[in-house]
Image 1 (cartoon, rainbow, N blue to C red):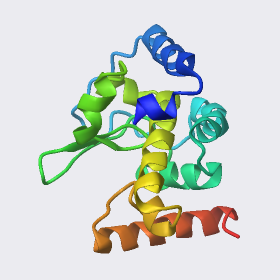
Image 2 (image 1 turned 135 degrees about the vertical axis):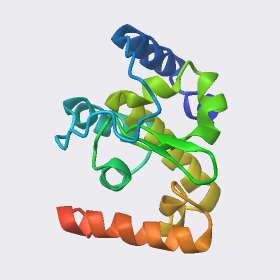
Image 3 (image 1 turned 60 degrees about the horizontal axis):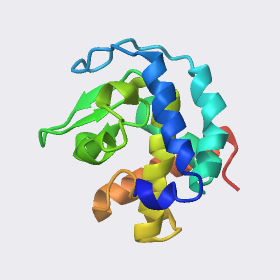
Length: 167
């Protein structure tokens, strides 16, 4: 949860929220892909290492997750069969919106690559704490259901192998 993860530097979340407010994104949510840019957003690259360090996750795994989730595209929205939706580069599911709202993070802010990267790192850390520092824990970012988890493990490992970051 944010209170635990931000206990060491409580100003960090405040700074992140203030920064996102200054961006003033007014991107419409509700389309499958708002602008299918295939180019990696520079903000995602700038924020990847700080987000990984802040939340204590492996930056190579975090980057692979962002690539698997959206191809590193910041403006992706997907509607799921169960009525939920996944938003932004990190494809954060709408079940997390109430908790994120407590910290001033709205669905439209998840369209910002830096915000999405930090939220992804936070979500990955929660998965690892809950399920262990294992491939199952990594894939629990997407799903703890065994069949979905196993498929996601394969996707993340394949992405890491493709980029040469799997050793």
